[in-house]
Length: 111
Length: 113
Image (cartoon, rainbow over all chains, first blue to last red; front, side, top):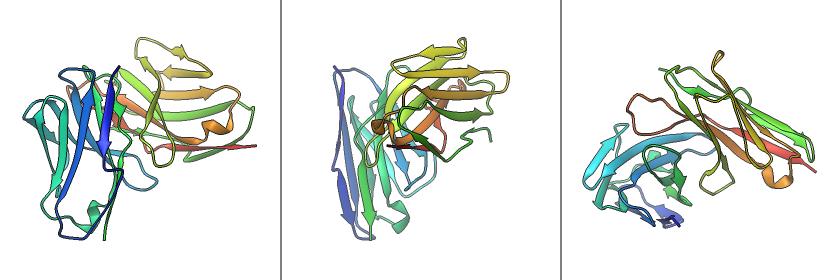
Protein backbone atom coordinates (compact mmCIF):
# COMPACT_ATOMS: atom_id res chain seq x y z
CA UNK A 1 0.00 0.00 0.00
CA UNK A 2 1.02 3.59 -0.51
CA UNK A 3 2.30 5.72 2.34
CA UNK A 4 3.53 9.26 2.62
CA UNK A 5 6.05 10.45 5.18
CA UNK A 6 6.55 14.06 6.11
CA UNK A 7 8.94 15.47 8.67
CA UNK A 8 9.50 17.08 11.04
CA UNK A 9 6.09 17.30 12.71
CA UNK A 10 6.87 20.61 14.37
CA UNK A 11 9.58 23.16 13.80
CA UNK A 12 10.46 26.46 15.45
CA UNK A 13 12.87 28.61 13.49
CA UNK A 14 14.18 32.17 13.91
CA UNK A 15 13.55 34.77 11.25
CA UNK A 16 16.27 34.70 8.63
CA UNK A 17 17.17 31.05 9.14
CA UNK A 18 16.98 28.45 6.35
CA UNK A 19 14.28 25.82 5.99
CA UNK A 20 14.17 22.31 4.63
CA UNK A 21 11.06 20.15 4.88
CA UNK A 22 11.12 16.70 3.36
CA UNK A 23 8.41 14.44 2.06
CA UNK A 24 8.70 10.92 0.67
CA UNK A 25 6.14 8.60 -0.83
CA UNK A 26 6.26 4.81 -0.85
CA UNK A 27 4.36 2.23 -2.80
CA UNK A 28 3.76 4.17 -6.00
CA UNK A 29 5.74 5.31 -9.01
CA UNK A 30 5.80 8.69 -10.74
CA UNK A 31 3.25 10.33 -8.46
CA UNK A 32 2.25 13.96 -8.74
CA UNK A 33 3.55 15.70 -5.63
CA UNK A 34 2.29 18.83 -3.93
CA UNK A 35 3.14 21.27 -1.16
CA UNK A 36 0.30 23.13 0.51
CA UNK A 37 0.28 25.69 3.28
CA UNK A 38 -2.56 26.18 5.72
CA UNK A 39 -2.89 29.21 7.98
CA UNK A 40 -4.60 28.63 11.34
CA UNK A 41 -8.32 28.07 10.84
CA UNK A 42 -8.07 28.55 7.11
CA UNK A 43 -8.15 26.56 3.92
CA UNK A 44 -5.35 25.04 1.90
CA UNK A 45 -3.16 27.12 -0.36
CA UNK A 46 -1.26 25.30 -3.10
CA UNK A 47 2.41 26.32 -3.13
CA UNK A 48 4.10 23.92 -5.54
CA UNK A 49 3.32 20.86 -7.56
CA UNK A 50 5.50 18.47 -9.49
CA UNK A 51 4.67 15.96 -12.19
CA UNK A 52 8.14 14.45 -12.38
CA UNK A 53 11.77 14.62 -11.31
CA UNK A 54 13.11 18.14 -11.64
CA UNK A 55 9.72 19.47 -12.78
CA UNK A 56 8.37 22.08 -10.39
CA UNK A 57 5.49 24.49 -10.88
CA UNK A 58 5.03 27.38 -8.49
CA UNK A 59 1.53 28.61 -7.79
CA UNK A 60 2.28 31.80 -5.89
CA UNK A 61 5.32 34.07 -5.68
CA UNK A 62 6.91 33.67 -2.29
CA UNK A 63 9.96 33.17 -0.18
CA UNK A 64 9.94 29.41 -0.70
CA UNK A 65 11.23 26.97 -3.29
CA UNK A 66 10.70 23.28 -3.98
CA UNK A 67 12.80 20.55 -5.47
CA UNK A 68 12.23 16.96 -6.54
CA UNK A 69 15.59 15.22 -6.67
CA UNK A 70 14.07 11.74 -6.83
CA UNK A 71 10.80 10.32 -8.10
CA UNK A 72 9.24 9.97 -4.67
CA UNK A 73 10.98 12.77 -2.79
CA UNK A 74 9.76 16.35 -2.55
CA UNK A 75 11.57 19.05 -0.60
CA UNK A 76 10.37 22.49 0.46
CA UNK A 77 13.10 25.03 1.17
CA UNK A 78 13.81 28.60 2.04
CA UNK A 79 17.10 30.47 2.30
CA UNK A 80 15.78 33.02 4.80
CA UNK A 81 12.52 32.54 6.65
CA UNK A 82 10.06 35.37 7.22
CA UNK A 83 7.50 35.68 9.98
CA UNK A 84 4.80 35.28 7.34
CA UNK A 85 6.15 31.81 6.48
CA UNK A 86 4.64 30.42 9.68
CA UNK A 87 1.90 27.89 9.08
CA UNK A 88 0.96 24.27 8.69
CA UNK A 89 2.71 22.72 5.69
CA UNK A 90 1.25 19.69 4.01
CA UNK A 91 2.76 17.41 1.43
CA UNK A 92 0.44 15.38 -0.77
CA UNK A 93 0.57 12.95 -3.67
CA UNK A 94 -1.82 11.82 -6.36
CA UNK A 95 -2.01 9.71 -9.46
CA UNK A 96 -3.38 11.31 -12.61
CA UNK A 97 -4.64 14.40 -10.76
CA UNK A 98 -7.26 12.44 -8.91
CA UNK A 99 -7.76 12.48 -5.16
CA UNK A 100 -4.87 13.75 -3.09
CA UNK A 101 -3.40 11.82 -0.19
CA UNK A 102 -1.88 14.02 2.46
CA UNK A 103 0.97 13.63 4.87
CA UNK A 104 0.65 14.40 8.55
CA UNK A 105 1.89 17.96 8.17
CA UNK A 106 4.62 20.17 9.64
CA UNK A 107 3.70 22.98 11.99
CA UNK A 108 6.26 25.72 11.34
CA UNK A 109 6.60 28.64 13.70
CA UNK A 110 8.92 31.45 12.67
CA UNK A 111 9.85 33.67 15.59
CA UNK B 1 -11.54 34.33 -10.16
CA UNK B 2 -13.70 31.28 -9.80
CA UNK B 3 -13.39 29.40 -6.58
CA UNK B 4 -14.91 26.95 -4.20
CA UNK B 5 -16.66 28.29 -1.12
CA UNK B 6 -18.72 27.12 1.81
CA UNK B 7 -21.99 28.52 3.18
CA UNK B 8 -21.46 27.80 6.90
CA UNK B 9 -18.14 28.16 8.69
CA UNK B 10 -19.35 26.25 11.80
CA UNK B 11 -22.03 23.62 12.15
CA UNK B 12 -23.12 22.29 15.53
CA UNK B 13 -25.22 19.12 15.73
CA UNK B 14 -26.37 16.70 18.38
CA UNK B 15 -24.88 13.24 18.50
CA UNK B 16 -27.04 10.87 16.52
CA UNK B 17 -28.48 13.55 14.25
CA UNK B 18 -27.72 13.79 10.56
CA UNK B 19 -25.32 16.52 9.40
CA UNK B 20 -25.34 18.36 6.12
CA UNK B 21 -22.33 20.39 5.04
CA UNK B 22 -22.70 22.55 1.95
CA UNK B 23 -20.32 23.83 -0.66
CA UNK B 24 -20.83 26.17 -3.60
CA UNK B 25 -18.62 26.18 -6.63
CA UNK B 26 -18.61 28.63 -9.48
CA UNK B 27 -16.48 26.95 -12.15
CA UNK B 28 -18.75 25.11 -14.56
CA UNK B 29 -15.70 23.33 -16.01
CA UNK B 30 -15.12 21.43 -12.76
CA UNK B 31 -15.59 17.74 -13.36
CA UNK B 32 -14.44 16.08 -10.15
CA UNK B 33 -15.18 16.87 -6.53
CA UNK B 34 -13.88 15.56 -3.25
CA UNK B 35 -14.72 15.91 0.42
CA UNK B 36 -11.95 15.82 3.02
CA UNK B 37 -12.04 15.62 6.80
CA UNK B 38 -9.30 17.29 8.81
CA UNK B 39 -8.85 16.75 12.51
CA UNK B 40 -6.86 19.23 14.53
CA UNK B 41 -3.13 19.07 13.83
CA UNK B 42 -3.48 16.39 11.17
CA UNK B 43 -3.50 16.24 7.41
CA UNK B 44 -6.82 16.07 5.53
CA UNK B 45 -8.28 12.62 5.02
CA UNK B 46 -10.19 11.62 1.94
CA UNK B 47 -13.87 10.90 2.64
CA UNK B 48 -15.67 10.56 -0.66
CA UNK B 49 -15.52 11.82 -4.23
CA UNK B 50 -17.93 12.30 -7.09
CA UNK B 51 -17.61 12.99 -10.79
CA UNK B 52 -19.70 15.47 -12.69
CA UNK B 53 -21.58 12.72 -14.54
CA UNK B 54 -23.14 11.64 -11.24
CA UNK B 55 -25.67 13.30 -8.92
CA UNK B 56 -25.21 11.18 -5.84
CA UNK B 57 -22.70 8.83 -4.34
CA UNK B 58 -22.89 6.95 -1.08
CA UNK B 59 -20.25 5.66 1.26
CA UNK B 60 -20.30 4.37 4.78
CA UNK B 61 -22.56 6.82 6.68
CA UNK B 62 -21.74 9.54 4.15
CA UNK B 63 -23.46 10.70 1.00
CA UNK B 64 -22.30 13.34 -1.45
CA UNK B 65 -24.85 15.14 -3.60
CA UNK B 66 -23.96 17.17 -6.65
CA UNK B 67 -26.34 19.68 -8.20
CA UNK B 68 -24.71 20.96 -11.34
CA UNK B 69 -27.62 23.25 -12.17
CA UNK B 70 -26.93 25.46 -9.18
CA UNK B 71 -23.29 24.44 -8.78
CA UNK B 72 -23.80 23.03 -5.32
CA UNK B 73 -22.15 20.16 -3.50
CA UNK B 74 -23.17 18.72 -0.15
CA UNK B 75 -21.90 16.13 2.28
CA UNK B 76 -24.43 14.30 4.40
CA UNK B 77 -23.27 12.39 7.47
CA UNK B 78 -25.78 10.00 8.97
CA UNK B 79 -26.01 9.41 12.72
CA UNK B 80 -23.26 11.89 13.50
CA UNK B 81 -20.79 10.73 16.13
CA UNK B 82 -18.33 12.65 18.34
CA UNK B 83 -15.51 11.28 16.17
CA UNK B 84 -16.99 13.17 13.23
CA UNK B 85 -16.02 16.47 14.84
CA UNK B 86 -13.51 18.05 12.47
CA UNK B 87 -13.16 20.59 9.69
CA UNK B 88 -14.57 19.45 6.37
CA UNK B 89 -13.27 20.74 3.06
CA UNK B 90 -14.71 20.40 -0.38
CA UNK B 91 -12.36 20.48 -3.31
CA UNK B 92 -12.81 20.69 -7.05
CA UNK B 93 -10.71 19.74 -10.01
CA UNK B 94 -11.37 22.50 -12.48
CA UNK B 95 -10.43 20.46 -15.49
CA UNK B 96 -8.37 23.24 -17.03
CA UNK B 97 -5.15 21.28 -17.14
CA UNK B 98 -4.14 22.69 -13.80
CA UNK B 99 -2.80 19.70 -12.01
CA UNK B 100 -4.25 20.28 -8.61
CA UNK B 101 -7.45 20.56 -6.65
CA UNK B 102 -8.84 23.87 -5.42
CA UNK B 103 -10.03 23.76 -1.83
CA UNK B 104 -12.77 25.66 -0.11
CA UNK B 105 -12.23 27.44 3.19
CA UNK B 106 -13.74 24.63 5.28
CA UNK B 107 -16.64 24.07 7.67
CA UNK B 108 -16.10 23.10 11.28
CA UNK B 109 -18.47 20.39 12.47
CA UNK B 110 -19.03 20.24 16.22
CA UNK B 111 -20.89 17.23 17.57
CA UNK B 112 -22.57 17.82 20.91
CA UNK B 113 -22.96 14.75 23.17
